[in-house]
Length: 376
Image (cartoon, rainbow, N blue to C red; front, side, top):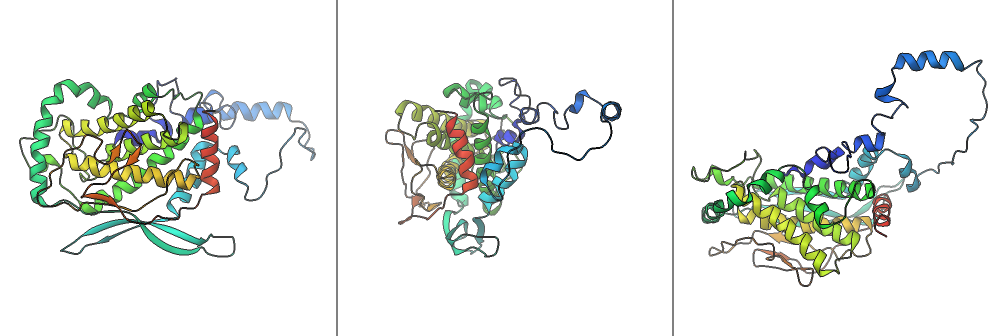
């Protein structure tokens, strides 16, 4: 899992436009309770006693908009830290994860619920689950071959050390260098991207746990990573998954993916973030390939659930059908064509025929529309 997880609450984003943890933005630095850190409870008690006078039951005296039962517009009244629970519950409500621990063909799959009828207050949803992403782990021979790449990439550590260390923290400064993304101007965009990242994180961690792929330094004492190796499994790469999710969702949101220059910069940035983890000695190239496939799939799924008009048809992708002679490197263009903005297949990573039905969520659509309006 990458340090992009720090986006939750904007931890680590401090200093970027003085956002002070984003929680401070939504709560005006402790403004909850009108005063927060700046006023003591005792002072407020004494102040009320001095001015409140006799109790009188009457109208409030200010304009107050009526709230409609079940209306998505009520979300605008909530703190972003509270909204996230509703958004996450909505995203995860249509997903399930399972493993087939067969000794001949172990397989892990993230499933999506295709609804034929949605839930109401009195009826349960109906539908059937279809595979969204499936993965198979690499065998021992392939991992040993991948170590040659990891060893070779170590020559770049001196050149890329500053990048690698900076990218351990949330990478928002990197994304904001390619796109005019600013906290003061794009609060809903940042809230949306945090939600997309958490979806990517939930998916990647399920696959990491199921596939249980050993890290490079666990297979060779000569790898000697330049940073502390995370304790969770190697494949898919969390940095690659999350970076490719960010890049693709941003393209759907601000450009519909039509601008070649912007598409090239964002996707190259995602790939470089992923490659830097191999340079650091904590991932194999195939980890980044798996992360790219998963990240693009989660971005497509997320955009479809949000009702983005630019979102593509969501298809099932499978990773891990390696031939005995396969030993791929990762550059960022194996599974994605920069020139066209389309996903591309390889023998080891390919889509299934047909498509998935992914229904728009009104809750998620509210956040997407609010974020999109910041770029008009």
